[in-house]
Length: 456
Ligand SMILES: *Cc1c(COP(=O)(O)O)cnc(C)c1O
Image (cartoon, rainbow, N blue to C red; front, side, top):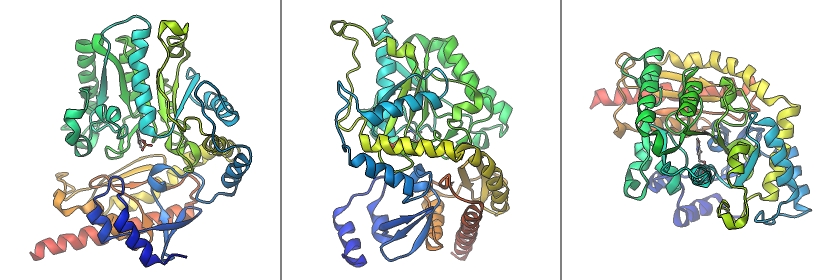
């Protein structure tokens, strides 16, 4: 067995971690060795709550017996064969299941291996759809400010988080940006006014550009990486209707919000609204293996269906598309969703979480706590009254999560927005414990920091 120290050394010498300033990693390295339910254990034997579900993936906890078994059983059949021009057993069964559980009208499943690739596929499908039905000029996309859809060049072209995306400007294709209803940061600070403003700007953009626009892409109900920003009720439905009126396709990116996290199987179900194309991933395999999906209406599918010589084929695919191990564990994950009524449980436990989160709202530097089911954002501010942010040099969100780590809980902030997105299987006792750790860490870090500033 390799020692903890030499593993750390090797990691610092050879690894380059995603979305990570490696100088930060060198100062605070961490290597996870095992998982157990909602906890993970590092190479020194320290135990941590996985309070962000290993970046929004995990559903039934780590080392779940049923999920492990599903993979073992599939492994005895075959690990992988291609989906190019042929299918496999679990990919076929999973497609049928997905059509059953997704909003009515999404009848076709195209597999890939990450959220970003699922988005790329959605964009290319929307683009080609109009060409295939003989409509020219519809080649652009509308996206929402602060939107995040993954990191490949196509996905960042419809992304709008300045911190991540600005650097790559010259590489990206240009998309039309409309505001997202971020009520807390809207000049009115009020839901109705903010919503009306955003819808008005969307309508203007559609009016001026609909003939050049293939599709609009939006994260339904919660903008995840943009800062866990929750959408006011009714907004999504109106976005959908406006796009329909202007003959613009709608893509719902449910990569983060899909599979129960908001208290419905898919976030769009809260608003009883169905997109033309939907992407999802993350929780699909229970957080086990990389499988993502792009689902479409039969109408979109049919636009690609013709004699080969008509050149309407969708020329896109990845080596591991439809991987059997991934599809097998996804099937077992979905069976568990059904048998254990996971979605109903999340809806119920969410009110408990909401009640417990109230203790955070009282803290001096917690500006807003935003929640949709098990997706929670805690926005830290310098001044609660004026909503003034902390200076970015202080790295308050990052400092707080380091303190959480010292206290036995892992998460990852987006700037000064802390994320709480526990595995859906978390019990009330575990949820309470996690929220108490967060409270103590926020209190300790923000108040201690304040003290330090006054000392200077
Ligand atoms: C995480 C995420 C993606 C990207 O998924 P990856 O699997 O990380 O590529 C895309 N869209 C949304 C809304 C996400 O939250």
